[in-house]
Image (tube, rainbow, N blue to C red; front, side, top):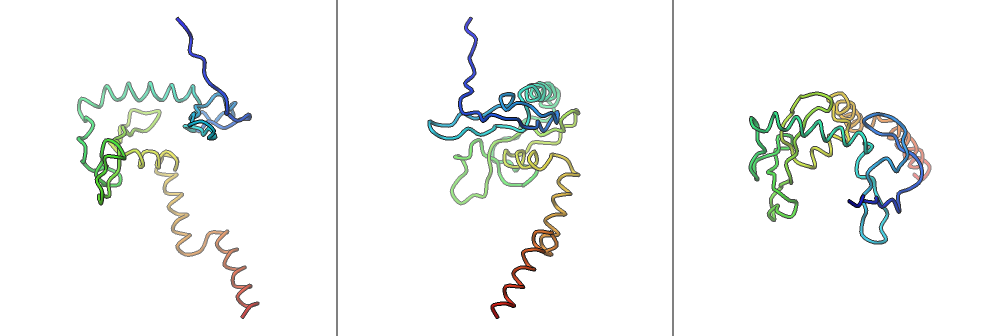
Length: 169
């Protein structure tokens, strides 16, 4: 049996932190998307290959327990997070419909807490935000400060714009 040889061309030299184990690892320890000829590679996930494997096994084990009691919803049912109708593929969303695509099995990693069936954009978004109530609340506070122009970078911007306005007027 021939062993598959992994194509590592285009993977940048260096290191990255795994979002799961928090360790600094070689970039070769992560999954990288191999795009069409000539395009730069991008990292597929923030977790290293070892953690992705563990997370995948954890998810599959939990799915066997949960899915008999809470199967994947039928297409066009709403996502439980954004309430938009979910279609099998992005290309299946009808013209003029504010829909989304592909149901994902959402659960809290490291536990057996099934949270629900949500669409791919919501699942990805929650993951990028940190996937916990605390990290999402932290980012919500940022947005609330931004509405009031209270973030430090906004304050600097407005101070400088006001100075320029006074200078030119």
